[in-house]
Amino acid sequence: MAEERTVAAPRRRPMHGPGMRMATEKPKDLKATMRRLAAYLKPYIPVIAVSVVMTILSVAFSVVGPKLLGDATSTVFDGLVAQSAGAGGIDFATIGRILATLLAIYVASWGAQALSGWLMTGITQKTVFRMRSQVAEKISRVPLSYFDGAGQSKGDVLSRMTNDVDTVGSSLTQVVTQLISSTVQIVGVVVMMVQISLPLAGVTLVTLPVSAVLLGLIMKRSQPYFRAQQAGLGRVNGIVEEDISGQMVVQAFNKAQEESARFKRENDRLYESAWKSQFVSGLMRPIMALVGNMGYVAVVVLGAALCAQGSIRPGDIQAFIQYVKSFTQPVAQLANIANVLQQMGAAAERVFAFLEAPEEEETARTDAATGAIERMGRASGAVAFDHVSFGYVPGKTIIHDFTQSVDPGSTVAIVGPTGAGKTTLVKLLLRFYDVDGGRIAVDGHDVRDVPRNDLRENFAMVLQDTWLFEGTIRENIRLGRLDATDEEVEEAARLAHCEHFIETLPGGYDFEVSEGAENLSQGQRQLLTIARAVLADRPVLILDEATSNVDTRTEWQIQRAMDKLMEGRTSFVIAHRLSTIKNADKILVLRDGDIVEAGTHDDLLAQGGFYAELYQSQFDAA
Image (cartoon, rainbow, N blue to C red; front, side, top):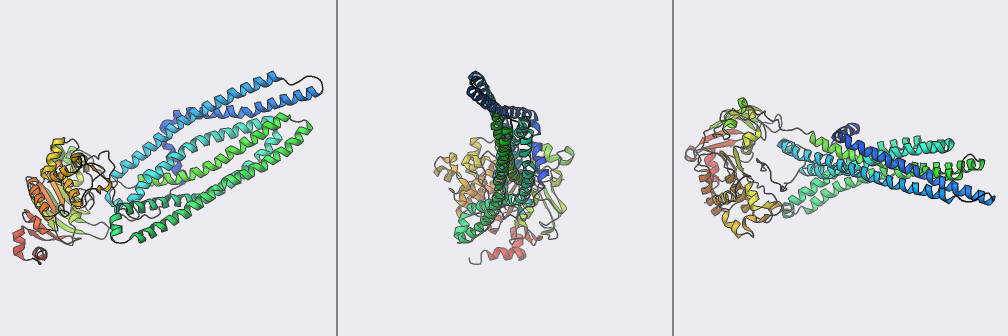
């Protein structure tokens, strides 16, 4: 059983244990995903409106530019014609005014574009910040059963929080800004082209429906590949996270080749989906370029004919050719936006799918429901199991009909073979899972009527699987009670017999625990988690194989500290080393989810039953 945080987490990044393999998820509707993503932008509508206005101004200024250049060209052409006829020359003053106006327009266009980009970048980063925060908060509300189920992986959740959210962020700025600017530019260019020559504009606009049809076909074809690419990226990240966290186990069992083969299979699948998505979507640009070039050739041929007839001026042809280029460029950008939009949609789908995952049902905090636990703030420690039944999978019951009362301040040991249901009882007591039948009560109140935070504030846990985060020794111990002073932290370490080895570390209590706590021994990690429980000072203790990773002498020292710590507290001790529970007030012997024996150590040995058999089996050699 992996240790769970029962207090507010510090700012350090936690270590993650091995995850599970992940199956490909069912993608959601892209339109629904885009609508939900648009809802994130709703609070920023006024700023978006300003950005849109700036974009429109920027594009409008840039669209006027080619027409002014055409006018300058026509002025030069008319001057040369007049000069050749002996009727005048080139009007350089007019050309100078045109070029000065053109320079001012381009500077204004750049300024408006820069302001629009600055505003949209801020909006998208705030949106991504909110989304990432929601994913982080969601992790604390997702029940353990979410990760116990098939197809869920901690590595995949990490991928959604990092890769997918980053994909949404980087794509959102590009999509919003380019979508607005490209659309406005197309409209502005069309208006200018119609003003210059309606026949030439008609030839150019013929390319629009052709481009739209081709674009739709490519989008429809590439979207499944983008979804598969994002899901494959999550699987690959999950495998990498597993192999890094379990590197010692992989190497100890010589499974490096098998893990490499597993990674290669998933990486090959990712390569295939990524290659297909990028190739199919990459066809957009050359296809749009081909359509645009065909329109460009048609404009040149028809424009030359019209100019020869005197229907348009030479400068207008030059301006129109620039407009054709300006027209095909935003069309190509829209094609690229469609590509980015698909990738962003696939990433957003995965983020939203996690945000929609089932959460722990929380109990409303009311005096009537929580009773003494909330009013007193500290339970007395009376615990009752009343005909409890539970199974992780429907139809497969693990705990059948468990009934037992525990008096405040007593020590109850729970023993039995592996799989008997010992740790499951602890999970039920802390409401990591809720019972299928019966009830569990603390101080006479059903735990399902108590908010989880209020309930867990009365429990401290020391588990066999240690959990330490990247930070100092002092910070790791202080996780038990974040407002504890340095003196209280050091006193807890002394009671847990950590003081000696901490003083030998460079920096002492300020020694930095590495990622995965690899720079500490397993026993030292266990001692620190015990010190954390000592500091928490809760009325109910849960010790799940708390001394399993320490040597015999340290175990004896810890047992003395635990005996003192358990005085006046209700304690649940799960142990395989039966020698550590001789002094328990009551020993419950579980077998296949049922209590088969109950009593003190001496009474159970005298009965000569299952407990006596377990006990003697540990000392046969002696």
